[in-house]
Image (tube, rainbow, N blue to C red; front, side, top):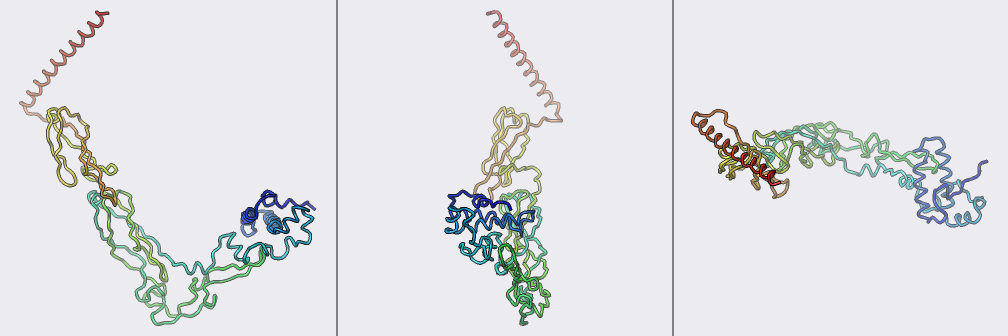
Length: 376
């Protein structure tokens, strides 16, 4: 016969471990090796070993004797016999099982309010509506609480009968034997679905379901500053659950149509403003369109194509805030494609002046380089 392992080794604790550390180690190992959870070969034997070790180390007097005399002190202690949790500060066997495996009783599930399913609706809005915010009315097909029976499923005035399966408790209890001993498994009654009663006269409108299919018009408030892909939640406008409870929510998934001229960049708006060569070279005061109208913009002389000008506060509002982004105006110098004879003449004159300036500049540069060599 194989020698017994040290009980401290079995639980994976040191000899000076506290009572709380021993209890925690036992609970952790019991979860891991319980035969109802662990189907591996040897799990049941391991669980028995863990149980036997805790039966001794979990009791102060038995532990003291074991520390002095080892396994010889366990003879007559009844290790592994009877109720293994007796005298160790536990409640009923069912309490232990719920503590170890987090099982909830059927009554706790039954008393919890049911919640209906959430719904999703895809909505396309314009660029301006996304920036400014808007209200939209949409039609939603959904399950709604029956107005006739108010979700009970029973015809008004009709009585209900006690469920013969669960005797009105809404629970089915089955006694099972385990390594722990005897424990009770509690489940929701499948006949009455945990309600404890059965409808004898179903509602004529909903046929006992407690809800009906309907198409409802819902107003959706879309806040200013939303963007493509954002979901707007409308609380309580989802589907009603069977037999009463809390309706789910409606989630409106937004798609924002692109604008013809403006583009969004975070909370800023970008706009490409075409200007003429003369305006860029000489400077000018131009008008730039915004979502709120036109804004005057001063273009300095010598402005290059691609330069960005910022118009404060003409961008996208920050959702649920008074802050707002800016409009970024990107100037693009436009090259004329058709010129009058007079324009061509002036441009040739301009080009000749530029050529002469460049020649003088190059000559001056050559003289400077020559002087630099001669000075050496």
